[in-house]
Amino acid sequence: MSSHHSHLSFAFGVLGNISSFFCFLAPLPTFYRVWKKKSTEGFQSIPYVAALFSAMLWLFYAYMKTGETLLITINAFGCVIETIYLAIYVTYCPRKVRMSTLKMIVLMNFVGFGAIVVLTHVIFEDEKQRIKLLGWICVVFATSVFAAPLSIIRVVIRTKSVEFLPFPLSLLLLISAIMWLLYGISLKDIYVTLPNVVGLTFGIVQITLYAIYRKSTPVNNDQLPEHKDDVINDELETSNDDEKKIEVKVDIEIVEKKEEERDDKEQQVTEEKAEEKENINSNKKTEEVIKGGCEV
Image (cartoon, rainbow, N blue to C red; front, side, top):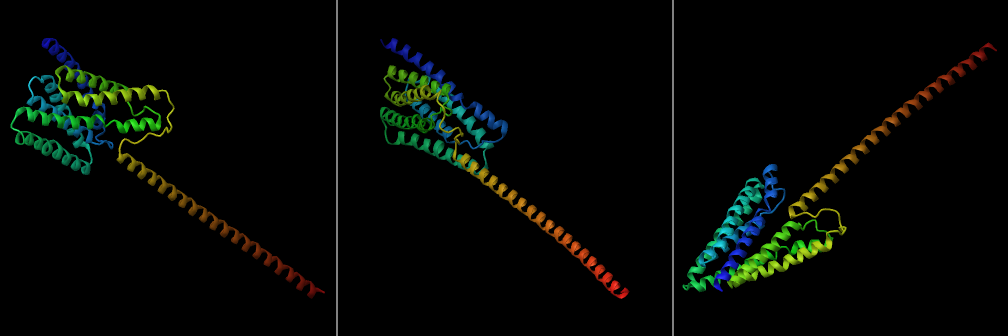
């Protein structure tokens, strides 16, 4: 019976590794674009810092608990790939963003993780208690990561569009949650099982929303910005456009004013010439009258 369970857990663990492997590779096109354009284009580093922290936690949990080799393999890969993503991000992001990202990495992945390692060894001497404490920390953080798509779900419902809900990634995340859920159940590991129950729930919700709205016409065709920086950039661009429009309008008014002044001058010159001509004619008439009077 135990052999049967070990075979099942190994099968689910391998499938979980495969699906999670592709999930870790999902941001590759984004970072290829960042590398090619030498710009982060307003993308935030928080998801990648959190993903690295999560992989480090599960790696430490698997190291503390025996028989979790398949958790070690995938999370070791996760640590490597997320570190590469963050290295690319830090290289090409603006200076101000770079400093805030480095601070976040130091606080979460060094100070935070270091504090967890120390606490698990200081608070409890018993290894089972250490695993229990670390397991619940993993559950809390992993559950919060799985709950992150809530913002995307709200956007999909509000816009009635699946533009920001990529089906392949949603399907991969759902399959990954199912595999790790079955892996946790087969090993009777509550700390692996619980967060994947949440992951399975949100995965089903996302796939259901995709099925409902995939043929729907979006309420608003304008693309929603991914990040706050995009909103700021849009506002700055709008402001610049408005300023340009004002400048053009002012230039047009100046040109029109100059044309009016020129027309007025031309009209004045014409009137002066006409008046001068009229005076000349009048003088001629007067001279003729005088001459006529003299002749008489």
